[in-house]
Image (tube, rainbow, N blue to C red; front, side, top):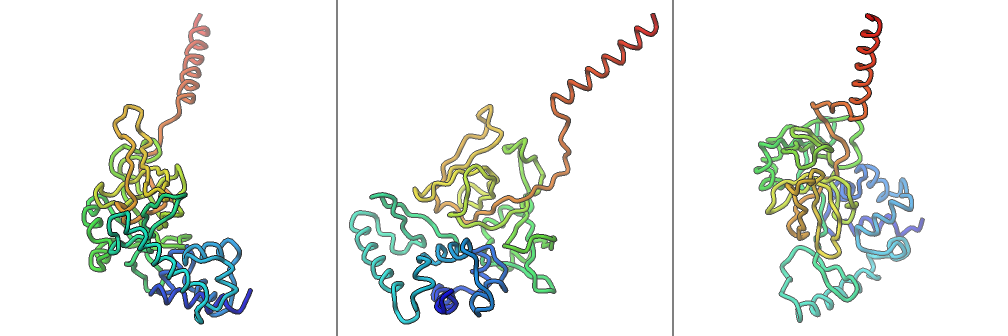
Length: 290
């Protein structure tokens, strides 16, 4: 790889005002892995390189072939974005103070939020990141205090083997809107996700500004400024589909594992087989008595 990659990585990170840990978390990497990229001790594979370029909103060619610290294409791009923002304000309400950029889809402009990694994490005595547990009783507080160090430190924190490639939270399920996938009082282990990484029809935890904390199946339409929220248990129309504006969402967590205390009952076919076996046993008994 070119000699520009490592210094460009450091330059872009500092330009955003982020630490190595914050960028690593956003990319789903370990901090020391990202640090090794900056110090030229290792190089990313193509998939990781694409994620890095996407995170910094730059092409792979620019990332590896241009000395960005000496000017180059990033500054020109910023000038173009500033010009574009002036064009937007001529026809749209003033969004100069908004914290989300603009996505161009065809000829239509839609605002969308580029989510930053969680600002507050806790570490154990070995310097490893803990997994914060958010029970139902702490949901209201979490909606207001997810960026408050004191509140986050007041929550229980755990270390679990195998969860070292990102920032994780454990959320408690409330209600039966996701039955049979999830049941009331289940716990889900969830990894922080950027909105651009949300995959259709997967289960996520949404921390929203108006709807509370939702654990639902999502359809991602962030380029149109929308997230579609579905419940698995909607046969009777009790839990209708919700269409949320992207700026309503504060955090997104991808559910990677479920813990449950409720073992599922046998399936319908199994029940029928058991009934048939019982009937056969009783029939043999009656025939033997004749």
